[in-house]
Amino acid sequence: MTIDLTAATQFATTHARVLDRHRLRLLLDPRDRSAAAQALQALTAYRNADGGYGWGLEPDLRSPESQPGTALHAFEVWAEVGACIDADAERLCDWLGSVSLRDGGLPFALPVTDPTGCAPWWVGADSSVSSLQITAAVAANAHRVAVHDPAVAAHAWLRGATRYCLDAINASEGRPPAYVLSFSVRFLDAVADTMPEVRNLIERLLAFLPPQGVMPVEGGAAGEVLRPLDYSPEPGSTVRKLLPVSPVADDLERLTGLQQPDGGWPVDWAVSSPAAALEWRGYVTVRALGHLQRNGVFR
Image 1: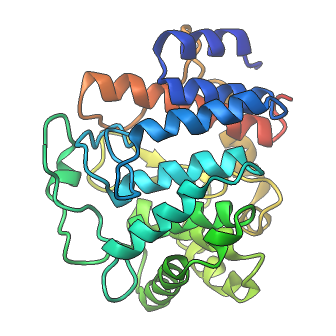
Image 2: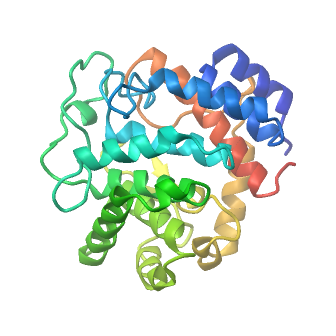
């Protein structure tokens, strides 16, 4: 199977957010610094005066106020841009520190001011307790940014969130829910180079995966599962070295074959609105192409 990059680009032009169109440009030509600059500029449309991000940067969370769940997407953009260090990343860390709970964790969501078009799991979240799922997801992407941004690397919020995640993973018993497991593994992978002692935790979590690495999502859409690339998208990482080769190869072949006739990739989870459905497809298309490019399916 081959990837039709022209069709993918045309899909993004037709359907994707401006942000994801610039992210796709940067993915296909990392030397295009205008794409990097425009991706950063597009990201600012979702920024609030408090330093956090809202306004549907997380497509199923369309309320305007800053939320922890949107922060992971902002860090994702900065990690992709890489060497272009953006002072907004430090300001986001400041905001995250201001909404973290006493144990260093982030709540799954803060109170939603306008539930219109928002998914129920965001609207109904308990803001008084820390969520390993969200804290691990945000901290993992922040650690990717920290490689390029000394201010993020040294930030007190990231130290506290990292300690919370390590403590929560250490204290967990039994197999975590699929998304908690996935984000915990990706967090540990993000810190493994600087904290080699987490290898034992990684091995413990990976032992919960079925032989082919396919894990059903409890309470998700019909047939919704997480797969090896959800746990380990990066070749050469600590987690990838611990995974069997065959399930990852099978997942790459599966992902290659999912390109649709319109050039984009499908979304396999429940979405909250027609706008979110299209926005997620643009996001998922960029993510799929990123996975395939980094794993050598195309150059």
